[in-house]
Image 1 (cartoon, rainbow, N blue to C red):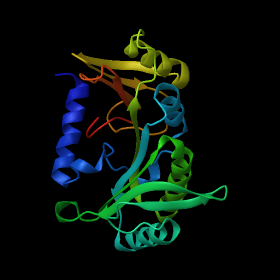
Image 2: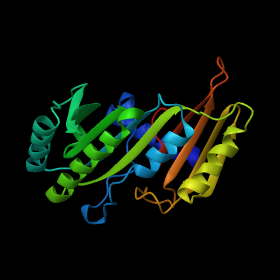
Image 3: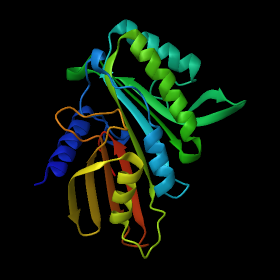
Image 4: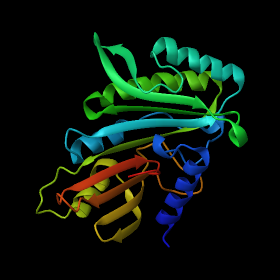
Length: 240
């Protein structure tokens, strides 16, 4: 079994253990607050806008450790700054350019064997990607100031927008090289599925124990023949 499969299976097992299977993806591991990467999803937005149809979705996620005071502070920020209630399904973001941007989000404190950990996820349509980046940057600044230790991840998913006559895996890997200066580390192929891991210095999110900082996953829709594409940093986990 390839390392991509092993990493994905480990991540899926973690989701199941946390009861967060339907919530999306979790970063590989919560890190040390003194070693947090700078928050930036601009390279992933650029890749998604170049490779996917306009109807793509993009999400960011933070998973880490918080004490009671930090958790209370985050709750206040989300409720008053973003109108997000604990475990809520929808939210309205901060105003940008005089227009309110619509984001979806949820957050929760974990319990049981994961007491002291917190999970935050925000999602938007591709047309609101910039507002999502702004919201994430604002929250990241608060997390750093509060000293909360954790990690961000980002995922975009949609329909590959390339010419049907092209080989999508070649087009996607070529875009990773040209747009992200990425070096392919490993590829896994099966019938109608192509997953690849890349190393790139243009994305700050890193997973512990691997050089990988970006992952792509192509999956062909057996009914329509279209190729679905998901990309993530540092890696994809959960359903894709």
